[in-house]
Image (tube, rainbow, N blue to C red):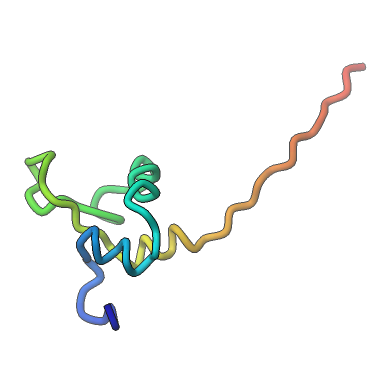
Length: 77
């Protein structure tokens, strides 16, 4: 895949190749994606229909750094 100028919507295999992630990483984060923003189904009423992904929004999702919170110990007085 050379450019994404024409349409941001791509198949699963194209997304996996472009982002260099596994299918499992995509599946693990499925509950964090929004339908219509990150993905949609080709046939909306069919739950077994192929998924089409918005590569621009997925790239933002996977490339955003995550800040972890430090655990603090509360003192009991």
